[in-house]
Length: 275
View 1 (tube, rainbow, N blue to C red):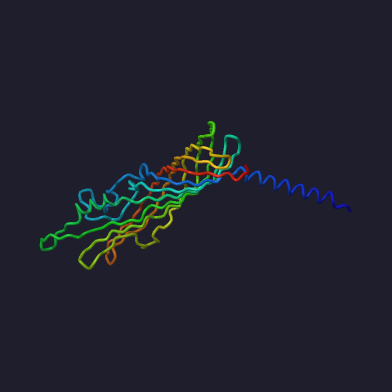
View 2 (cartoon, rainbow, N blue to C red; view 1 turned 135 degrees about the vertical axis):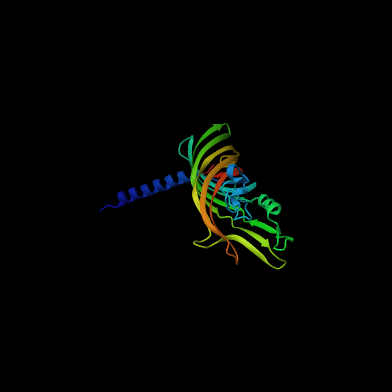
């Protein structure tokens, strides 16, 4: 049996497949970007009331129960880093795979100021005034977002404007915090998230979605630069207990972090294809 025709067919199929894969990779653009992370909406708002201990309407709270974020995340201006792969489906429509990392410090000053004004000064059983200094410390918000995009590009000479719808996952780290009360020169009592009937939250993974607008400029056939504004949002409900170490006071906390962020970034892109 002459095997030459069969071998020729197999080689032809393999060559066509390799050529097809080569053409596929030649169309892919890899991008790296970095810039600001701008909190917006609930994510940046300040709210003290939810963090106070719950009391009857006719009573005044005497302490904080924790550091809640459901009415105000108190996120400050942060930074963002991103990676992306883009592939054109047509001359105007494209898809993208994206990773974005953002970090925001959390503003603790409003709670600290409220504590100093309302809870720091006490009266002992003998009617003598004394002070209990308190300090609130918190980890930052750290978010890792993985998402896909479907977009439309409008070319303008060597520039193009892109509009992209985004959907994916936001893996937001729980920002651990602690109130520390200095009851004497040598003794401090912390109030912090504490595992009572379940573990303290760590990763708060939820669905995220948003929009991106990007202006890109081609420096060459392979290399380009761009400016982008990427809005992403997600809601992260969670619950835990706070407890005073060596004390009987504990609070059941039901909270939600409403992540709302605009990443304003400068980026560089590289196309894998040959010149």
